[in-house]
Length: 92
Image (cartoon, rainbow, N blue to C red):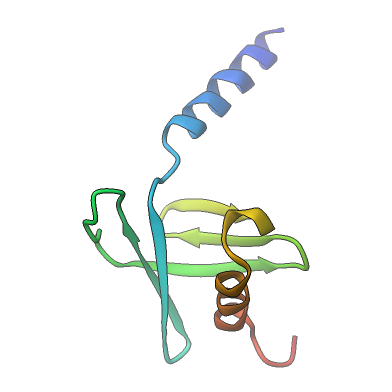
């Protein structure tokens, strides 16, 4: 019971601190970086991005210290294809 309460509290904290706005990802050479565009239109500082999972339905990203999972309904289809192209490593 205690483990369930702790899990619920941790999930609630994660939900509260979810980033809001639009993630702008760019590639320079082999390096991916991203900036959050807040709902107020302010661009936050640039952070490194590491794509550690690019599957058929799910993309796993580390944006700075944050872990993000992008599902197909998280972004429009053309944006998802663009992100997959940025994260694709030739030979894999």
